[in-house]
Length: 172
Length: 277
Image 1 (cartoon, rainbow over the protein chains, first blue to last red):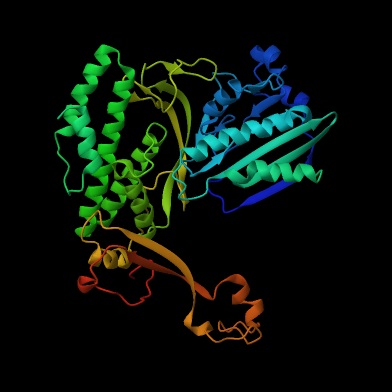
Image 2: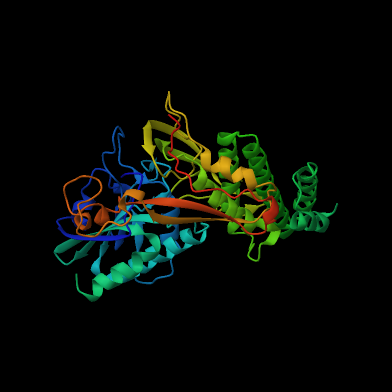
């Protein structure tokens, strides 16, 4: 995680070997919440190993984003966060840049997840006075059967949805 | 003054010093509204308090600029910007209600005239939060129900961070709040653009606009695309500074919109650096 971005709409898609099973075996996976978390098709994931931090951390305002996911009106999307309440910690960098928590989703709900993120970012854009473009970083691992891809977007918040839709049209 | 009179006073205020009793009066009105259980009125009063704070910070910053207290003015403008940020979701001030669009625009333009470019930013982890409204400890799956940024009993809800672990200080160019300006030892900021502005900005409500255009540097004027680059790199101009944009500089033009030209001190183009030394 870094503090700044000068990108406009960078989209990097790479092959990944991450899947839900690997997440379930992570040391931070809360065994007490296993039943609920295994129902989720979108999981927010912590960042491991930021400088001197001892445990996993989430970007600032993840609690707010998690609440947004929980209140999002969708029958298909089941969102959760992969940490117990006791182990939850936020890393505050005080940057004028939104870094969303990394997430893993199933392919079937990717369009819903994209819409959810775009709605969340729209809310954030509305809170600003438009003097500068709101920059954002979004990192999504998409699991499709036994294959996974990683989608990393860095750039203007308002270009996020359009960029992902364009990439999808070209089957990237 | 009653609430309506205070609202009108703030709407049409064009002076240099606000009535200092207004915040106390609003506080009293708010207590009454809260005791009556009138949440809408309490929220309306909170909005007026915010309007007062924004105008007050703006006027204080203006006075500090007049006295060349630049860093203090910078902090006041930043504070006004933050108060506006809190207010924006609760009050539609389009149509320049309470003069806030004017102030918002001036803050934005003024911030560009300061030489500050580098700031420090704290890196820390937080493991515990409390709600500012009910003081309850908040966790991921156990919230008190109060929404951050909403107004309850005339007060804005925020989170009080506890159990903070400090990791370091980062040097950044664009932190969320920009109070922590770096002042390197032995270096002195050049406030020439603000000094020039203040020669003609004689009333905080004067209307002016900042236009930033890219001008060609003198040494590149008349140079053909295939000529050797003026930077002496040995490359052709088209493959060197024309491509990188190094042949241009930002020209800040300040345009006063309602000035009497007889008393206006027109200024020639001047070049400045961020530092005096």
